[in-house]
Length: 330
Image (cartoon, helix red, strand yellow):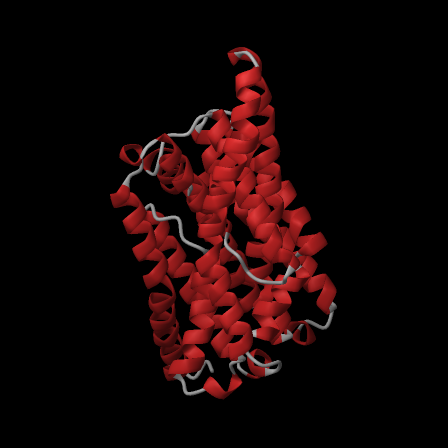
């Protein structure tokens, strides 16, 4: 029950960070209303998880660490979830858009290494995940440039300003839908991965494994919406105004490229980050408008946060696990 509660709590933090990536660009460009954006995130992230989240959940829950490791070490699972939640909330307070994948995978993997359980790590899967993390923002940057120059700009030249603005408001809404869907297939799937890997359903006799995973996915999607409502303002401001200024067309380009990039990794079963992809897309917008419009200081802070997050998550997870062990909880 503690693992279930910690997973939902982590979903709340992810809503304030990862889910903000889904609506931050559209809100910044004023192409979608705040409440409508939250409703879209909740509905389509839930749909993305239910339809295509299993592959990513299996990779994180049973692929990085050998099958059976998490089931035999429930204390590790709980400590990792608590650590990921704490680090996620810290990054929200610092207005840094980081990835839930970094915090949770960093927590579990770091504990495995520090506690001397490296024999349980599948380094082939881990290397694929690392490549995914590194290349996601770069691919999104290139795709954004291509979409804007080959699709958006030619259309804009052929349409009047009024028609152009109307069309791209609708397209920006479509972009939020697509990003929210891929968010569910990656972020919610990552959060539910400890449920799959630890097989805790056998400790809940009234529920089957599929029911537990589905129920948790629905609860986390709702927690996403709560996180957006209560805590996402700081991260949304960073994404919508502090990296580069966005208009309807550039917001759509960034959203579409993020959705396409991450969805490609979803098909491979890899936990790509919507946050990484959106930041890469927004950085491309800044480059298109000129490097003077791109905040190097903000981008540098975000990159530093991405590098430190897994290490901090691992350290906090070990501290939490040691505290639990001291009180004979594990």
